[in-house]
Length: 362
Image 1 (cartoon, rainbow, N blue to C red):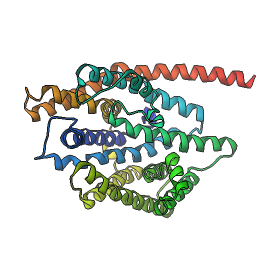
Image 2: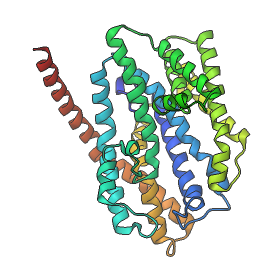
Image 3: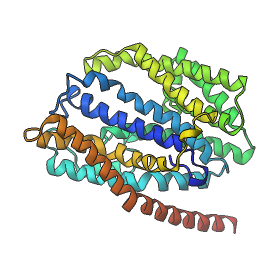
Image 4: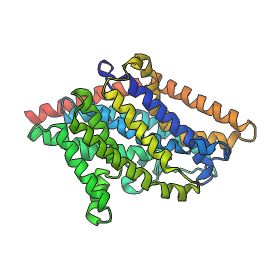
C-alpha cells in the first residue's frame, strides 16, 4: 500500500500508523483475554477503552482504496501486479516464518501450527482452501487480495479493451453494494459478495472517491457518492455490533462506532481537499513504513510473549515493553529486509514479465 515518494501523500502514512497502533492496542488490551484466552493478561479496568480499536482495519480499507487508485494511474495490469506482489509478499513471507517459529518454540498450549499450515499460509490464499491463518491478523489481507484480484484487475483488464474512467467503477460497485445491502439473503448475491466483498466495499469505494477528489476537485457528484458510501459503511458497522458483542461478551456503543467511522471519512476528506497540508511532512514516511510489518507480526507473537512472561513482569510494563519491542522489530525488518527484498523481487518480476511479453509478441 505504499506510494512512490515523489507522489507520496504523507498524511496517509500517519493515518496508517495510527490505525495499526489502534489494532495493536485492541488485540493486546482487549481481544487477547476476551476471546479464547489467547493472552493470559487481562485489562478489564481499561480494556473497554480500547475495544473499538478493531475499527482501525476499516480505516485501512479506506486508505487502501485511495492509495491503489493512485498506483494504477498508468492502467497497466502487469505493473500493478508487479508492484503488489513485490510490496506484499517479501514481508509477509518473513512474518509467517517468524510467527511459525515462535509458535513452535514457545506457543503451546494456546497456539499450535504445523508445516502444512505454514506452507499453505505462504501463498496468502489459505482462506480460499479453508486453512487457518497462522496469525489471526491475516484475515484482512484476504479482503485486500479480493479487492486487487476481482475489482482492480478486472477494471484494468476492461481498460485494455476500452478506456474506462474510475467513476464508472465507482458507479457499478456502489450499485452492487446497495443491492446487496437490501437483498443479502439472496443466494446469488451471497456469491457476488464473496468475490466483490460487498460488506466491505463501501470503504474501498470511499477511498477511490477521495482519490478522484484529490486528482480533480470536489463537486456535488462526489459529495453525493461519498454520502451514500458513508451511509452504507455506517449500516454495516452498526450491523456487525451484535456479532461482536456475542463473540466477546461485551457491549459496544453504536454512537461511538458510527462517530469513529465518520472521523475516518472526515480525515480522508480533508486530505483529498488539501486541507491537511500543514502536516504533510516527509518524516511521516518512516511511520508509514512501519505499519505493514507491525500489523503482520504483532498479534500471536505478542500474546506468546505475554503468556511466557506474565508471572515475572508487571502486566502494564510488559504490554508497554512488548509494543516498543514490536515497533523496534518492525523498524529493523523494514530497514534491513523489507525494502531490499521488495526491490529485489520487483526487479526480478519486471525482468521476467519483460521476457514473457517479448516472447508473446514474437
